[in-house]
Image 1 (cartoon, helix red, strand yellow):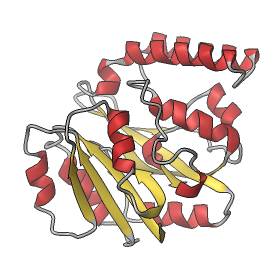
Image 2 (cartoon, helix red, strand yellow; image 1 turned 90 degrees about the horizontal axis):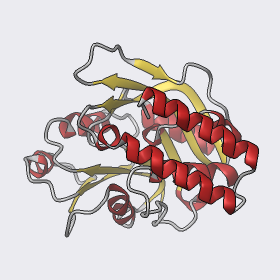
Image 3 (tube, helix red, strand yellow; image 1 turned 180 degrees about the horizontal axis):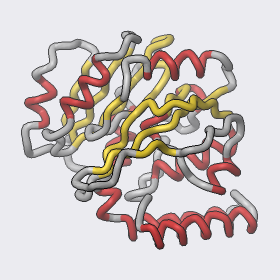
Image 4 (cartoon, rainbow, N blue to C red; image 1 turned 180 degrees about the vertical axis):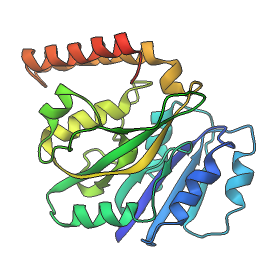
Length: 259
């Protein structure tokens, strides 16, 4: 494991419209000790051609042997990392400024007990008159934030940096039985046992697209989360009150149809 090196994980599939903007936001970073692991999940467009046009040894391109679900692909890509720290950038998102990596790294290095530092983020709506918005509006909690996330889950995995030696079962950190909510499962499990730090600045932009998997499969996501919550209650992962809070949150998602 390379000390102070940050492994950036980018999963992509037919991402020719956005992948260059995502890569450029990495190249602009003032912190230079990183590797960008790009896992191409069998794209059939110009994604590979665009990526291979970048002549930078820190950009490492891998073509999947076969197309898989996102979280199977993420676990496979994680096995290629060599850094001490880990962060995620989906190919249709981007980082908002050149200080993003440095700010997160400096914060997580302040306390060796921190497993994660996360920030606010911007939601940018594609093909919509809705304006950009910063999530969440309130300051972010720190420490053991499990109860906060149960109350309202406003965590974007692209907003965070993780200390790899604090991640159990690495590189298989994502539960692949879930198609659409493995991020949620991973963060909830981690937040119950590890300390989180926070930065109250929006350091990345999440592009909310009408044709994205998370948008198209919102109903399936909610159903999976309901089953997850009931299963975790049976395992005594949380108590009845916490379970009911999650159900209230899921009912809110159903009414809003927005993850």
